[in-house]
Image (cartoon, rainbow, N blue to C red; front, side, top):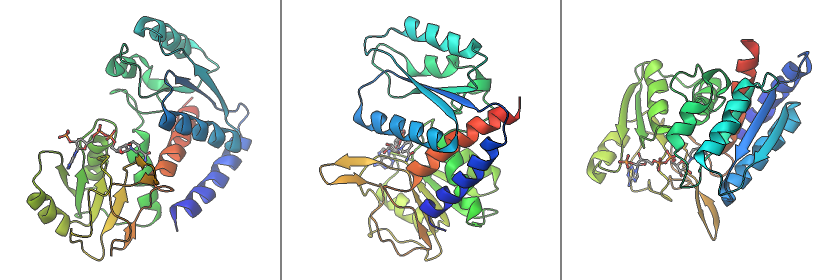
Length: 263
Ligand code: NAP
């Protein structure tokens, strides 16, 4: 199933799940930026929520909001019984420390899965795993390579693959191209989360059975591009756009439902 077909089918399932709920799940998105990409993400999340029957609202704060002021908003949302989950849309203005914000969100309301005590996983790696499972991808004993080691994508992705008993290798900016080629040649599952347009080109060799997951979103005058050149000769390559971004959005709604089901 393509990602678009999978999303459509999962949305139908979620919609009927929400319809059966006595009280609709509620989501709040806090945004403190004028970033074009963030605006598009927020719009997408609100659209998904509306489509699924989830109550979602946007709290937009001015760019000059201080960390103390944001903490007050977070503390209020943490206590608000009508709010099941909320996210603070990244990036944040320079005067606010992102790590402090991630730690301030109550773990039981942390739909983004960023808090170290959150029972939920960050949406991008969780969304990817859900899709790969749905596609029947085998993990046990397979060679998985994750390129990128950020706290929101690379590291949690590696952790989830390890949990499935993959042999996981994490590569990063200090990995030589020669080593990267060597690891990728033997990989069964590859997840690239770097943010460099077509970092992985056809110059790299892959197994024909390889699964390539492209997390990268790189914008230029021509539009959106992934970290992997399109059209690799492999079993599965996720597209950009219309790939991991959609899986991430879906996982956010699934995380919200998980919070609701544990109440
Ligand atoms: P990040 O925090 O900037 O991390 C990038 C990682 O890539 C770092 O670990 C860095 O290594 C590594 N890297 C940089 N240059 C490299 C190179 N030449 N070769 C190998 N590794 C290299 O980024 P992020 O937040 O993880 O996001 C990565 C990309 O995914 C971005 O394009 C972002 O927009 C996209 N993204 C998409 C979604 C989605 O839903 N589709 C969600 C989140 C992120 P060092 O640690 O050594 O610096």
